[in-house]
Image (tube, rainbow, N blue to C red; front, side, top):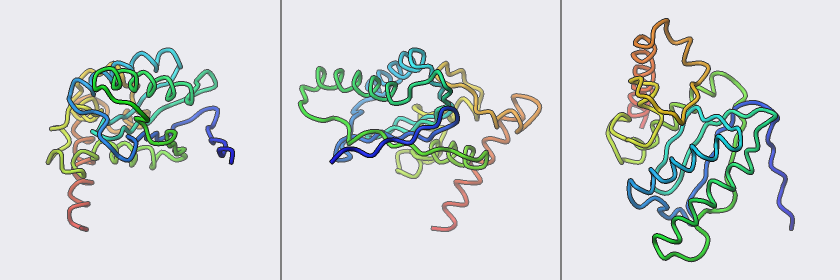
Length: 189
């Protein structure tokens, strides 16, 4: 049976997820996550993809990407995950599928969802029990938005500028809205 065609708009923002096959760990060590980050940097330039938010977990990745008519998201994800699969196969003497199916993508159609999705991605390590606070996790875009840490992978979320007039004010407000989300999630459980 043929695959269903993927719905990718000409321009806009998408939440992209790629999981390890059978939800297995595909990033065993920090160096693996750094390698994937390097591939993200390389492929985003070549395929004209902008990355606004990201989180590299042990068994999956989350990205919020911005695309335009020059972008090729399918090519980007194929090349990215293939590069990493070759690295993984070589370094861990592994054979077989590393990634589960094709990547998943969901169109972000509203500003509210863009902000919510960014928070969701950056709180992923907290929800997974890897850390207590998002700033304790190294492999996400949280440090860029919450503390102004330079991160050449990131193209700033367009909503970030409206949080405050200065970089310091934006960082304070961003930290607060993420912490509010964290506190809200703990109170309803």
